[in-house]
Length: 253
Image (cartoon, rainbow, N blue to C red):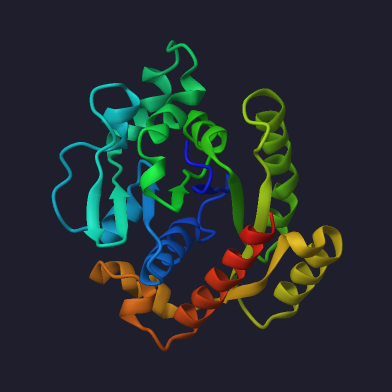
């Protein structure tokens, strides 16, 4: 696998925290900066696929995971590719239950294509099951998007324990590179949670926060990323700032 390739999983076992929006936005903005990027939709809901591609999906990540195809890569533009998902992914845990080294299947698939990309971004499902395990086993970096609310804050312990298990048993390089605060609002609760996160975790929390913004919800309906759909919106502004911060952070590691 090419050493220069950063494989980044956007993961959180809680849904509705902005994993898909963040994967799509970060990936498309990196591509706009002329970085070669591969996006992988690893969620059976296929929201990342639907938000960026309006064509028909014949093969998906599912067919590759069960050994019926190579990674099906769709070219979105010169610098941005997508491996789509399908509803069949919901059956992957059962179908792969008896497969030897099943937690390393994605890793092996990515080894064949990684040298073509500077960044591979994985949109993980909202669970800590086999698909997420495959993603973290393949990753050089793990980023956790989370909403500034009490329950997601408490759920960080569970995610960290899962990452530690992956690190000890499967991928010694697995580590949380950053936590992104999403859907941030100027409320006392948001401010308090942010303060506690920064107090407890320090620089691992990105300085950039993603403000709650209706354009972020509208963009996927037009099969566009936020930077194209509403380039002057706070959502586009925040994600551009996040990408700049991410590039600097990864260079330091």
